[in-house]
Length: 205
Image (cartoon, helix red, strand yellow):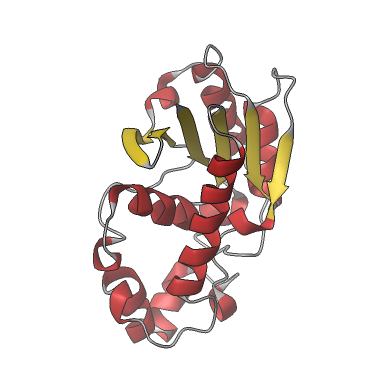
């Protein structure tokens, strides 16, 4: 059996400021570092064979904290980077809601109807991240794998495992910072064990 643990990076400065990050980057806040440390403690008795991370610093720095007491490699992959959100990147969500009202509404509430977008399309993004994760699984059969990535990456990957349609992509649960997802994989069967869990938030560090 292959076991996949997937998490989002810790809180960043742009998360605090309500800014869109996408393919751009922002540093972890003190809270984000604490969240990663909490997840590290939560997983301390869980055997992990290998860690994959988005090549974005916010994900890689989270992966280093989560895996700091493990003598295992952390492999950066561009394929796990967040969706390229084009001209939205760096702008606040409030400004986007105001200046791109129709596009914003369609993106978040009717993603299956989004035709034009000044960034990566949903189809391009889905193909990139799902194929990256399937390659990771195929190259590490029988291992326990930790993947550190981003909110939209996790939404698309988990939607693939549960066969969720695009029109319901942004339904609950929300992928909070360092939330934990766990999937058991046997042959081509996927069993979701944990979905956007944040139990580690209660751990004192």
